[in-house]
Structures are given as C-alpha cells and as structure tokens.
Image (cartoon, rainbow, N blue to C red; front, side, top):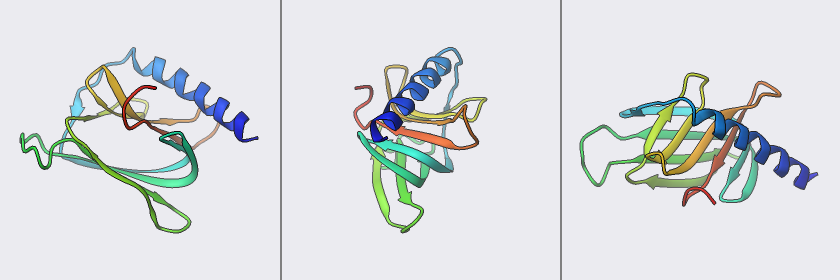
Length: 131
C-alpha cells in the first residue's frame, strides 16, 4: 500500500511539474502563505495531514532575512515536523493555485499542487532540489 501511494504521488508530481513548466510566474515577495496538505513527501519521508507555512522575505537584500522560511506542522499533534530557511530561493504562485519554491528555473525545492483526483493538496519538499 505504501509503495502504491509513493508511485501514485510521484506520478501526480511529475504531471504537475511538467504542466507548471509551460506557465511562467514572477517571484513573490513579502507574503505569508499557509496550506493544509493531505499528503506530503518531505526529504523522501511521507506524512499525512500537515500544514505548511511559507514566508517570503521582502525584497530588501538583507542576507539574514532573504529567501523563504518554511515550517511544516503536524495537524494532529501540533508539533513542527520541519523548519528551515531556504536562502536565495523564491516563492512562485501559479494560476491554478500551485506553489513552488526554487532557485530560478534550475532547482525546484518545494512543490505544492492540487490533486486531480480530489479536493486536497499534495506537497513535495526536496531540500537540495531535484533528485
């Protein structure tokens, strides 16, 4: 069952990633976005029912606040599962509601996409980009 879920999520993310490549978006600054996620893959570990908070820094050039602050919280326990600042990364929002965090067009570190099979969000967090 776990392998089937992994394969299904990988398939959904690959379709979503290829679609997002056809649309262009400019980086978003000085905004905080919070999404409830049904299925999450964080650095190759799987989680269910989490909330991700993405805080994009203002366009100030300050090395201590630049990038995207990422916090993932387990909805059942309220505990933080993941917390990190992605320096020199940007938040991109697409017209279908998909969110991506990455370093330009080269490395996509976070993909949040809506499932085509239901009304829920999926998350894939890859700290070092595509692997």
